[in-house]
Each structure stands twice: as structure tokens, then as C-alpha cells.
Length: 511
Image (cartoon, rainbow, N blue to C red):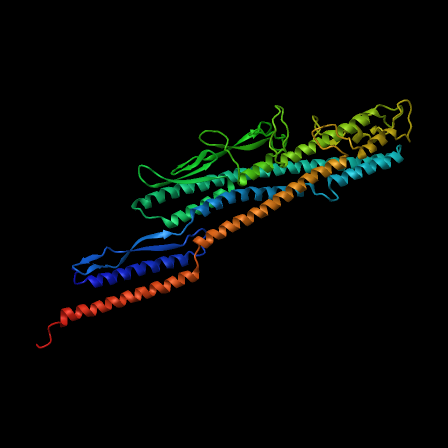
């Protein structure tokens, strides 16, 4: 048999559940624009009914069992997968755009333009081989050409330095996000000991993983501990734990000599910046297996050498990044300088008696001639008569430009380059090949980045559709629970009238 106040208790339960539901709706509306917020709903359950003798079971109202976070974990995992690809190609797109700008083709200060002016000065001198003013013009055009090569090489080195600095910054971000996730894991674990879900803290953690997934490839798993029967989260990068529930394994950057760069990538030594960062695990000192994300894109832009064969016969990184274009520039300069040095050494100076010509180009400061240090030979810089235009060593022939013509003919020599590992063709063809490779790679990166952005947006829209707050839906629910609250309050008033009649008025008739 039910108690005398049974109906009152049922109405009160309706009042409390409606109030809780309205509070949850209020919370949803307040956080509707918050990044990563998941809509919450109340889970109601009918209270245990009581048996009535011969009359069945009488319901006893309802209670709030839990407040649930509306979230589709599959969409989160899908988002993280697409986001790490997006981060990688976004960085590649930006990096290749910056490299393209460094070459500044076509322009009045580009390689092609200054090389063309250099050959034009050679052509003009061939018609006036004994004229000191034309020799002076050639010297100046040569200096302009070599300085253009120097400038582009140093710009590439600076780009490499900037990317290297960005890598260090991204590693700091990874560690920061991972540390925050570990802290949230601890809070979530402690708050969920009673069996309920820490909804808002889980949202905060998901936002951090979203950000982390853009930087590096992550494998996120949440498993139930066999001892405590509680959920614990693990985040791996490659096969190594970055986050193991409470425990954090930080990444660290350390400087390596460029020619000893990790992962078998042969990096041309940068004289301005002789060390580059490698990324290792703090505990084991082993290299981090970075497969995707912004870090992968940055490493590719910095180190990608286009698939060169190293000294051991091993094919290295096939991606064409800054390192590839530094190598291409050095190959161009090395072959170009060698051709002109050989030809100038075969000719004779504009002196009486003529002397054998020397180098046309040399390395500023000595050593191997590379794009960053190529300069006109000091002998020519000091005395333009050392430009060996003549092919006659027996007597001075001021109009003899036969040796100079051989230099000029190199402009159209389709077998100019002796290195079989690089594109064959004229010097102009080589520069065009460099720019063509860059244009193809930049266009590919732009296209894939754009496509990936669409994929990420699509998945995120699905997440928002599933977990986001719909203001109209929330207001509709608010009206529903407000009416339920009002009805429960009305039932309390009715029950109050009934109890007043039974307690205070029953039996008064006839007195």
C-alpha cells in the first residue's frame, strides 16, 4: 500500500527532473559557441514502482540517472586522421610558396635574367675583344650574376633556418598539449570514479587532441583498466607513447651536424647555420617516428632532397624540399663554373705577350665553388685583361675572340652538364627545370591541401551536426520541460489541496 504522501513524492520527482533538464539546456545554450563543446542530455529513468495488492504496480515517478555527452567517437578518430594529413600538406603548400618567392622568377633580378645579361655582355665583348670598357661591363655583369646566385642560396639557407626554428616551436606545442592532456586524464579519472562522465573535461581533452593531431601523427586509444574497471587514455606517435594516462614522454630537439642528419637524409652543410634540429624522445633518445602532421611537412620542406642516391647507394628522401633546391643550385654553379674555368684556362689574356688564362670563377674565401660563395676570379676582378678572349698564345691579337666564342656557345650547348644525375640541357634549360620542378610540386601541394581542407571541413561538419548545440532544438526542449515543471508544480498544489481536505476538513460535516 502506498503511503499517505505518495502522490506528493511523485510530483516532487517530476519537479526535480524538470529542473535538472532545464539546467542542462541552459548549460548547452551558454556553451553553444564554445570550441569543441558537446551537447549534453539528461537520461531519465522511472523509479521503482510499488505493488498494490490485487491492483498491479503503481509508478513512483522518475529520476535523473545521468547527464550524457553527445559524441560520436568514430567521427573524432576520423577527424584526427584527416587533420594530421591536412597539417602536413598545409605546411608543404606554405613552404613551397615561400621557396618559389625566393627564386623570384621571372624578374629583373632572377637567375635567368642576370645570366642572360652575362651572356649578352660576353657577346658584346666578342665584337670588341680589345675594348677595356666592354671587358669592364662583362666584369660587372658577372658580379651581378654571381651575387644573384649568392643571394638565392643564402635565402634558401635562411628558409631552412626558419623552418628549423618552426620545428622546435612545434615540438614545444606538442609537449604542452600532451602535458595538459595528462592533467585532464587525471581529473577525468578521479571524477568518474562514481560511474558518471566528466563531460566538460572530456570536451577540453578532445579539443587538445584536435590541435595535437594537426602537428603530428597520433594514435589515440581509450581502454578499460582490468583492475579498476576505469577508462585510461593512451596517445602514441609511431610506436611510442607520448601520453600514457598520467605519464608523459616528452619530445626533445637536439642539434645535429647537417651532414649527419637523421633518417639517412644527406643535408648540404649550411655555412651560415651549421646545425639542424633532430627530434628524439626524452627518455630513450631515439628518433621520433614522424609520419604525418605539420612536423612531417616541416621536416620534408627542410630536408627533402628529391631522392638522391647517397654514398652507400641508398635512395634518400624523395620529397623535394629546400635541401633539394640547394643541391640543384650547387650542381648548376659547380658545372657552370667548371666549364668557364676550363675554357678561360684554354685561352689567352689581352696582354703583350699573351699569357694563359686562369679561372673565370672561384669560391669566395676559397674551397669548393657553391652557389652561396661563387664569385668572379680575383685575377679578372683586379685586371679585366685576364679575360682570355683569344685562342692565340704566340702574339697579341686584340680582335681575337675565338676562345670567347666558345664560352658564348655554351649558352646553347644541350650537353653542357657533365653530371649524369642531373637534367641535361643548356644552362637556361637547367634553371627552367628547377623552376618546373618547383611549380609542379607547389601546384600539387596547393591542390592536395585544398582537397584535404574540404575533407576536414566535411568531417567537422558531421561532428558539429552530431554534437553541436541547435538553439531551436534547445528552446523546444526548454518549453517542453518548462511545461513539465509547471504541471508537476500544479500536481503538488492539487496534492496539497487533497491533504488539506483529508487532514483539516474530513469529518467536520455534522459537527
